[in-house]
Image (cartoon, rainbow, N blue to C red; front, top):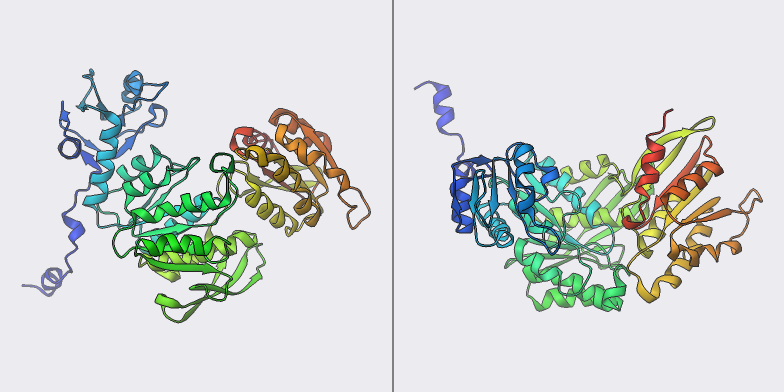
Length: 490
């Protein structure tokens, strides 16, 4: 036997090598769902929206209150689907089941149970999508592409099982975002995933219209811990005034607890953060508790103090999942903003270029304050804020909108465009903003929707060196304004 053959025989065995390469095939879907396949097939993906089907996908024909996916089976096959999961026979390859929603849940659980992947669940009032992406980037780098995560904001009763069903059998890590609007929605999601690590980013008055109190929001977010596997880890923000409340929920379940933040007793504690040349931060963190004593210095590309706190949560979750901290530090240093969640663009302006910061996907009082503070720290000749209404605040809405005048003042904003009815409460307060350091009084405008906001910003006029923040709840539609200015020639 040659030396090369001898070395090959010594190659370490990986249990994952016995797992399938295809995401699903007809037999495995039959086994998971109890359904009956009409044909043999292999699939590379799972999709529930016929518009998003790609070649090789299995299309799940879900039935909702107003829409029946069976109407779009032909469209799914026209776009390249190899099979469908249906509750009635169709003229295409399919797996016949009694209930397509239950079949999706069955696939999710089968995907979870067949994979050795460490699973991380992320929730919170603010920052969960960005934190989810940062954790994924950290683990994907360390595992050389063997990490999986939920895409977009697939974080609800359909998105979570769909994301889980898409997890390859050979994945080493899976990262799943979980969101809620009402009480009782987090527990079923974490039951699907059964995470090894569950992270709460922060508690803020998002969805307070439906939950009533901040305590109720904290209690509902803490339900993510109920799905933790035995020996799992709850990762909790130490700086939250509801920290002890959330820790109590975790302790009652008998899981490990790791805290992160600036607090002196945090397990992952901020020692120092200094601004870096690219607008981000250079962070030094101290580990303690079950993590042992150690220090880590790393860069965070995303600007803003909120991302310093987010990074500590990312580091804590990666460490708890057994990931590589060096890879996490590199991932945080390279992350750019996501579409609608901090993406930055250079757009055409008189005399040159202006910076446009796209935060158009979501907004609540905490995230508004954080991004306005970051805007105030952004080098610019003029700072402009286009602010859309914050939804789901109920009776609290007028107060929370009016209170934005303070962070606008602190950030020395030159011009404010308010968009939406709820923003009228802020518009009424803007007249008391003091003059800027150059002696000019800030200007402001009120608009009904994105079309008027585009006109108002064009009328104000962008000039070289401006910085523009665009932020609001997704339903306001300020993504249209971002598209308008980022697609303009020049």
